[in-house]
Image (cartoon, rainbow, N blue to C red; front, side, top):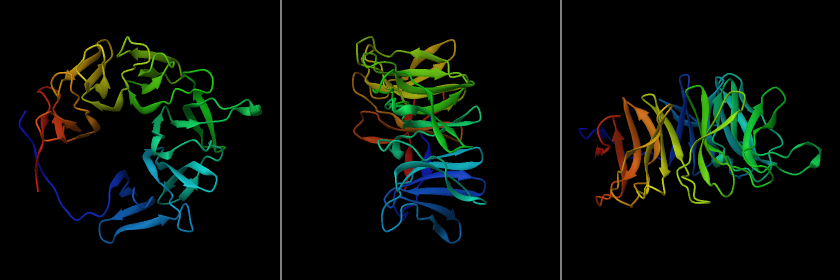
Length: 297
């Protein structure tokens, strides 16, 4: 595959994470922890001081679902789930998340008309926490309810990188402490399937991350300890299972391919090819081996 040239522009303020909703681009200013609306003329503006008196709202994990922007943010009482729309404004939609929840790890995802995310929810009757599990948001009552528990007891499966693929919700989760983090899927009735175990060694899961759909396959970063190729790029396809796409950093070294996004019919990612360039921008077209992108400054 030919190397792709991209234009780069300097002078942008701080680190930004963007999510589009209609004609608006919403930004999470990580350094300031505020939600902003990027107007093409006037630039970013503050929409809400979620945690006032000079404290950071720590707005993170922005995701569009049901026509609204959902995100975790800190305010009085700890981390809670919020939603925003330019017409209806800002609204807190959860009120009893356990303080141990971190907005950066919520991994918000819409599936089958519902909003799912990672959090720790205390069950009724004071019977103690479930641990950090897959949580479903009840928008009518503002409650966060347990959607599925992969691990019984307070340990928690710590589900992450929830992504919809082929009418199922795929995610990384721990089925047990001995198993480690592996690739799971859930039906719309919350029936769980262990899709792939990357490692046969107790406690060493493949830890799949950055699940991304590209050309009818599900791509991810994972460590198949048995293959001894390090942390590399894998794909999943129903009927074929999980396959190694490319050993980007040859041998046992890891490319740590991460932060994947699809644009212009290419799968972009951060990766280390072991060529002395370090962690840089790479692209994959679904056929030829991934290659490092040449950035024109």
